[in-house]
Figure 1: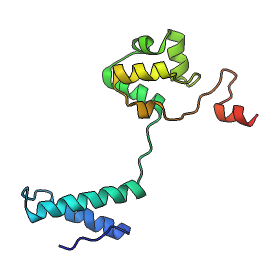
Figure 2: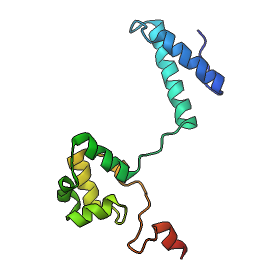
Figure 3: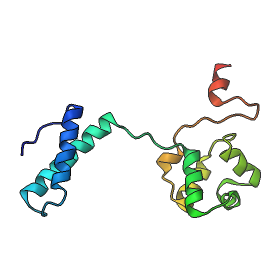
Figure 4: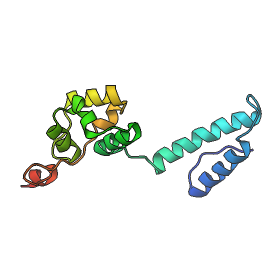
Length: 134
């Protein structure tokens, strides 16, 4: 089996097929070593050609709420009053550093996700982007 860099979609498909064939290789065997190298090459190719964007912070919070069976009231200790929770979830108020820390600690949402930029609509209806243009 020849190992070469993955430069094209055809190379990528070929590597995926080889991975399928080698998946059950005996640990420590030549096939297992070949599998490890192919997995590293595929990972590098996918990182460059199929990057995964970080999730939207508000969608991540809503997803975690659904996963954990939480209500908006359950977020009050992390975000503040009922109206503050509503403002955050409706994108009318951004997350503060204190909120991010509490959400990270209590809900296990990665800080990297929570600090990602997202559009916040101001009370007057303008988003951050629209307000900057005005």
